[in-house]
Length: 115
Length: 115
Image (cartoon, rainbow over all chains, first blue to last red; front, side, top):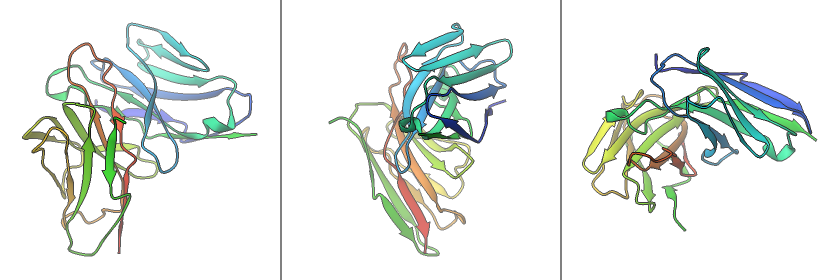
């Protein structure tokens, strides 16, 4: 119930292409879905996030698509650049109480953008 | 600069030895977290704390211990009971107030290896 399943495990895209990473969850009580970006040897940093009452959120080249009925959400990176090469994690947060702020992370996707 | 400081960056543990990883934040965040990162397994929660002098076990707490004597500090001890401690350890913090974006901010990590 607490798992978040992420795919693919790795992704290779040519510069200018679209990168798509998918996540699926089981717990319908999750109320916040962030994506984190991590460069080698660094800690993850928040990239973009969405709440389940919204179907899409766009920030620059990054878009989250959210399908509440299918319990799936995805990250789209438009016009992918070599500088986007990193590991991407989706995550989900349960509502308040003792679990407040606690995130369940997907397994991560290693994105490589070739020039 | 506000942020989360983890030290040391690299740490080596001998058999039967306890080691302590430091995490300090000056973001005035109430909640702090420790994650373990292994290749292909994403981030797994070890312990988290929502308030000083209180903390809860995460998904993989066995072989680890924490303390939260100050709001700013949340050290993690990897005990000799943790038989496979080699991993990248990440500390994070977040606000606890309602209405926040629930963003977790991460430190740069500590890479622990066994000698």
